[in-house]
Structure formats: structure tokens, C-alpha cells
Length: 430
Image 1 (cartoon, one colour):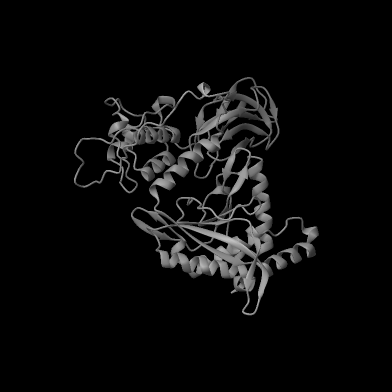
Image 2 (cartoon, rainbow, N blue to C red):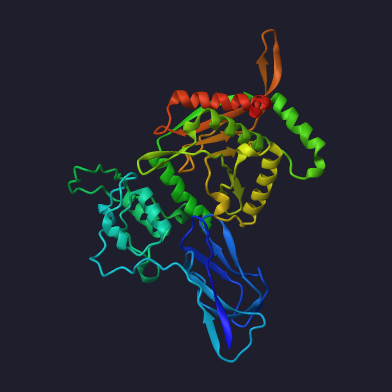
């Protein structure tokens, strides 16, 4: 008897409802262990599901365009060497989906939606057909899932459905019905987005946004609207630091990965987070969660859009090790191979435009973090040393911070401490 083994979707970290973009095999194909079977595209990365063992593909239970979550059945494979006339299937236990929704009243119009980031979800949403990550996402935005139209199988609600609902609510007039005394409405009465016929004014060309760009747009809009941003500016004299960086790169040319100023900024960020732990927090359930670890993210530009890989435990790693991991993560980002684990758990983010230019910018905080460091191109400037002007390499810095978590005085001290550490790398060893 031939026995086939079901291949479910493995753990993807924080991701759920991930679309299937490519099926790389067909029933009857022979596959090797670890050979890619299916390609998925999450919010910020393309991932491959490998074969757990060598064998023959028997059935495929998903199609291109389907969305899948951890534990969902993808296909079945007959292990190499298993031969017989009557097929059978070894069922691998998988997490059961949420209870299918019972018939409900018509979904309310988006005009009635009230966006409340800190509001707990109504108990009625517990019976909505949506995955855990979608429910969490809806809670963060204050969206009542009972008012969201699901476009998935069996009316299952995806992140895109939640985002579409929020966009629709934001473009509609605020509800005129009285609000409960226990809540505060944050609905905004925005006029409709202008959409002229651009072809009336001249030649045009249309381009589709990548999935990363589409998702990032929603996340950035949410972060900008819901977080009270303030940005401080400062500068650091990195003359000696740059000389040190070049010297170690020349000394260790055979190592491959070069130490960049970004790696030094990440190490300086750790020192500042240790000195000012209030910047290493996140909001959750009306409380502040103080983190005792130091995972630093860095903004990486890719052909498909911006992603933020995370280097873990930067407090335990030297600058060269951080630089090496950054290089590996940046390469995965460019190839679209970052996993959910590669982009989760960050405490603080550094966004550097030093390789491009500029004199300053106001980076948007990467929720659920409460601060982000921005850096632009350093330049030689005349600095008075008490007797004369001398040329020094000056690095502009900007720090965007969440005013709910910290205040202006703390932010100024944090950025001053970070700039001092970047100016004198010996301080990073303390």
C-alpha cells in the first residue's frame, strides 16, 4: 500500500493569510529533499516551501492566488521507495481553522466605523472567520471585524480586507450617531481622494505596486496617523571613527564583509538604549513592555520596496559580526528571501541615506517600536577648536520618537549620547 504524507504550511512567524504565487511542481513529479515546492509572498518577502523528504508528488490542494496560514494543507508526497497499488495518506495533525461564521446580519457600511487604536474588540468578533494575526492587526487599528467584508474563502477576512475597510472609513464622513460615553471617536472627515483623468493632460503610463509597496503603504499610514511623532536633530563628529572604520577594513580585507558606518550606528544605538531604557519599550494592552534584549533593525532598499531586517542581540556582538550579518540579511532582502523571523522582534531601527545624500529627514517610527534613527550623508565642515577652524567629518542625525513613551528632554539626551558614542567608539565598549 502506497502511503502519502501530507505537507502542511510550516510556521511563518508573525505572518498569516499568505498568498500562493507559484506552484513549482505537478502531481507525479519526483522531488528531492529540500527542493522548493511552492512559493509564497508574505507582506515583505517571498518564501519557498521545501520538500520534507524525497519522493513523488501525489496531490496538490492549493492553487495560485489562494491564501494559506500555518498548518494549512499544501500537498501530499509519497516517500521515495514506498510502492503499492492502493494509496493511503498519513494525516499530519494541523491547527484547526477558526470556527466558520454563522449567518449574520448585513455588514454595516464603512461610514459607521470608528478607529480607536486602544479600544478592545467587541466579543462578537470572536466568531469572525479570521486568523490570529489578522485579529491582532485589527485590534491594533481598533477595527471591529464584524464590520469588515471578507473576500477570502468562506468570507475569511485577510489583512488586505482590514486595510481596505480602514481606507474606506477614512474617506467617508464621520458617523453622526451619538457615541457611547465610554468611547472617544477618532474618525476623520476627509474629502474624497482626487482622481482626475490624467490622460487629459498628457501621455501617461500605469504601473502596478508590488505587494511590499502596497502593504508598506498601509503600515506607514497607520504609524504616521496613530503615533504622535516628534523628531530631534543633532550631529556627530565622526572624523576619528571613519578613520578607524577604514583601517579595520583595510586590515581585514580577506574577511569579505566590510564594516560600514551603519553597523557602527547600530552599535551606538545599543549603548543609548542601555543608558535610556525607556526607548526600548512597546505599548501592549494599555501598558509599556520593557525589553531586556537589543535587536536592531535596519532599513534595506530593494527592487520591490523597503524592508527592515533585524540583527539580533547586537549587545553581544562585535561591530564586525554585526556588519557580516547585515550583509547576509541585505542580500536575502534583495533576493526576496527574507523570512518572518528575519524581520521580527526589533527594538529600534536605523535608517541611513548616507550612500545617497541629503542633510536630514524625519523617519517614520516602525511600530511597535517607539523610536527610529535617521542618518544622511556625512560631510567635511569647518569646526572651531578654540584657536582655529579645522576640517572635521560631521554626521547629521535625526531621531523620531513616540511622545506617548518619552518626552523631549529624554529624546535630546538619548540622541546626544548616541552621537557621542558614534564620535568616540571607545564609549561603545563601556
